[in-house]
Length: 525
Image (cartoon, rainbow, N blue to C red; front, side, top):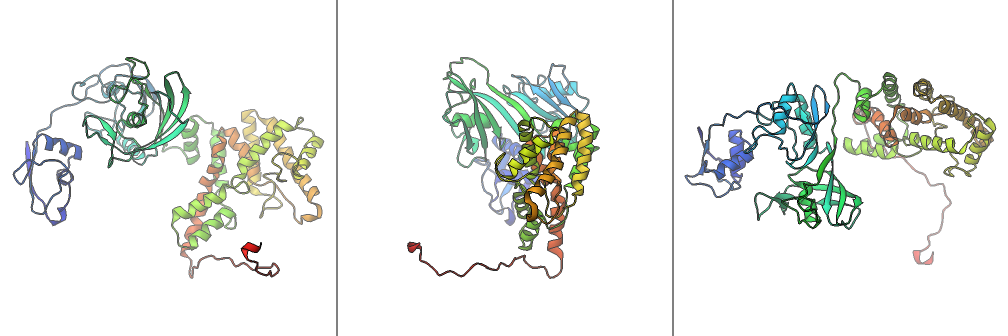
């Protein structure tokens, strides 16, 4: 047993008692709060009324630390479904009625005991009773949990959970019928003032946000999907109960309106989204690994080259110029990059790769013979005349403000597309796209005639979408992938903009060339 004698000074004035003791002792605040409840703390010779008491300068605090109990989790052979395992993490599908870590009443029948038996090693950060435990599920909640096998993985996973970058998706069956098909609950959660063993939506509680959407409606209950923005104790159970639709089978927050009787808690952690890079992999390999798991050597090589090709090609393109303009105003990096992303996503800029792919899918459906030049020419001319596809008169992926004779990035992507098409047995599609490139250029030049004074060529976007599709990337990431590459160029230009001599704000001058008009009052117009 150890006793600490502490005196609050002027700098401690107004600090909470539990925060003060946690800082001075190295114990957690929850541990300090329990010690206060157990009578192990004296303030000026008296037991404090509550842990949140504010200190005054000169207060004498006495903290008695009981000797720790010699507890240590032991390996126990149990049948635990392991979904994924590598050198750093193990992901399990936790069964119902299984406590995560040893505690009072559960010393050797927990998930930790089972993992100690099944795994060679677990992270030591959680201590001897919670090795590897980064997050937890309630005893009766089923589903996916990730456990750290070493300290480096533990630190990384804990940070992802702390900043809410780890995605967690739950399925739940709730009592009754939700009014809306989807919704968002933003309600702080803390200890219930009526029952300290329960959580509740309370003013002054910790921030708690949950997204939900209805998957299926039944006679007396509803299947919903919940996405956690934050991760508080009993968050989904408390939030759904606050809406009047508690989780079926919930013995703490439920109403049992569903007629389910003694059904188990109908809450399942269905999806877990974490960032788990491999140090020996390149950026492209890690991207593919985290997105789809397995990938070929050619897929990784192709994506790596595509990332390099999209990085930058001069400061005059729309998004890079946006970075320079916003940076010249003195704004922060986040704002400059956000502005660039807004520029890049346009279909005439970085969004063109997706626009090309959508156009290509349309042409595959509407051109019957992929090798017939006359049929291709007829349809392309209909597009140029705004009679087909999206009626814009554009053939996406053809033409560039700088590259006219050829776009070297497009030439390299074309080579990669050819090799990848062989691997994926999509050579017929590649041949069609190659012929579309040839005929689009020819038909564009003929259609414009004397209106155009320079040759056009296929740009980098013409083949990039097809390449990404063959790699197996969803179309939703096509443009973000462009941004991921281009951010290196944006950053370089921003650094340059902020550091050259005599830097000034970029302010383009505009000159009115319209005829002068007499002012007409608004009411007379």
